[in-house]
Length: 250
Ligand SMILES: Nc1ncnc2c1ncn2[C@@H]1O[C@H](COP(=O)(O)OP(=O)(O)O)[C@@H](O)[C@H]1O
Ligand SMILES: [Mg+2]
Image (cartoon, rainbow, N blue to C red; front, side, top):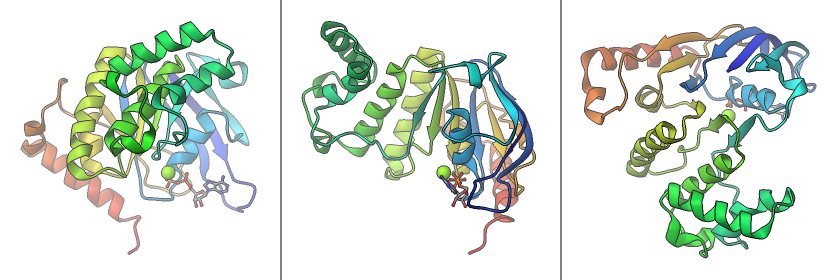
């Protein structure tokens, strides 16, 4: 589904490269996380995928087509919901379709449908400030689904939520993933979150990023909280933390 081939990238302002000859791939329908210390270039990888930044060399493929020839192949969900406070939830969701000049009745139908999917049917006419943080992130997720893209790029989407909401949102996200059959690339610096959600985890340990070690999580889906207590999972968690801590200065 997604393939990086020998990608090298450097921001103009800096002398050093963020990515150097990086290759990796993600299969269709997978749930894969990327973990790494803050500032190591995780979000940069997303900016390259969605075309916000241009690599110096190498190529990125989606289903074997270079992204240079493609449009609307990925949808990005940031940490902050970026909802317009003066628009209702329904009107926020409708906005990208208004820009695409989709008919009003079609827009309304799709908004109703998607709100039902994310469990927020009663909130169409509410304003963002009337919703909790978890609900706003569900709206934000609904907006990425409305793009129709197969590849969802979720950039620390739950990191601003309190810990219980965060756990509930992780369980909710796995349900949505199963239901919609999308490919999800999920950035987090939370090792436990990465393990609970993902089939595989890419670990960023070097700088510039020259490779990402891919670690399979030895758990089946559906996942349960109790499986996080298995000895092999606790061991995996500790080994990931010790790999990451080498990169962090406090
Ligand atoms: N648009 C940008 N222009 C220049 N430098 C940037 C830009 N975005 C991020 N950086 C720098 O690149 C490095 C990696 O950033 P980022 O990919 O956001 O890291 P992460 O998501 O892993 O925390 C940081 O040092 C950051 O300051
Ligand atoms: Mg980031």
